[in-house]
Image 1: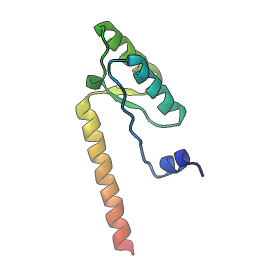
Image 2 (image 1 turned 135 degrees about the horizontal axis):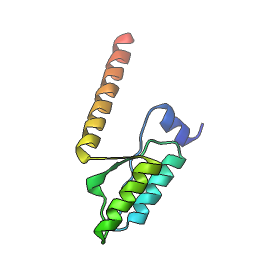
Image 3 (image 1 turned 180 degrees about the horizontal axis):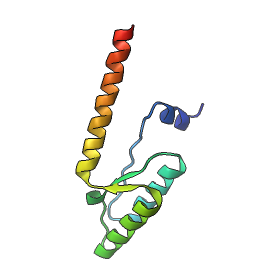
Image 4 (image 1 turned 180 degrees about the vertical axis):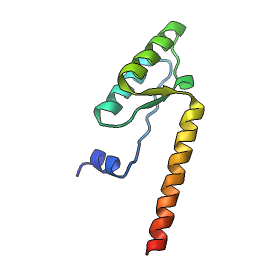
Length: 97
């Protein structure tokens, strides 16, 4: 089993950071994530470019083609829920022993 398959099987969602001054890297990161079968989530406040119009065009493309563009608050909430689920699974596994 490959490392990528193991991560997917365990519902591990690796993060990726990129230089917000170069939106092309952000687009490439989104494409890379989706090509490996991951759900791509992009916090819209974390994306910028030198030209403001480029931000909106890139976010539109990412949201339309590669993943979900959401607010940072939504991302934080998502990972909070995910962490709670992991905690519940660990607690259930510990009591089952």
